[in-house]
Length: 325
Image (cartoon, rainbow, N blue to C red; front, top):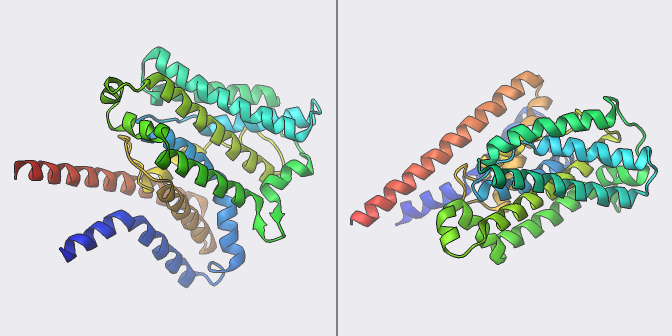
């Protein structure tokens, strides 16, 4: 009984132990790692990734995938900057229109997947190139500099000189998303779609409507992540954003989101992102170059997928064994 409990705890909270282990390792390897300034930097740098990953997790929990979120972020960031700098719209209005654009891009992905009746992975493989092309055309392949200070405050500002605004936004998004997934009927529908879409349909759930809402939420969260990222850089370039989808996908799987859908929690997503953030930050402090970091992150993704497959197989075996007994 005791061994079974220990095994359950380890399986459930393994990623937390991994995070603490990495923090301890890099604290020993670098005297600069475990400092308030560096740990704050990790949270600031990963705040937009956490938000984007939470949005992607809605899609993944429902059994889908979105490869276009980095390119959505690029297009939203560029368009928002154009509205502020070139057209001269007020910052709040520009942000609002940028968020609405994010929702529209998400809905486009959802509508395309439903209309074409293909997996969202294939659809977003196509839309990502469309969004990238539109972003480069809109920006005229140039960088938009000197964004308004009130906009840059989203990614660079602090409340009371202590708490980063980007981290506050990340916390708010995390709480809202956790509430939606765990406390609302819509959240139950999201898990139901990922567990068995056909059963969800037979159970009276409007599958297409739920899918559209899921992709709209994903687009909104990608847009919020874009605002934070572009505000932190202080400029807008079409090359900013792409690549986030890989980090988000890796973090989601690390955090317990299955590729097959039907499971995952927001706290796990946050821990998954922080593991990658600590890895990147720690490797940089100990002197590993960017290419070595790519290798390590790729291996982490493979390990996460392998662990996910192992857990699924173990659960299936246990279920079969229990049913035969």
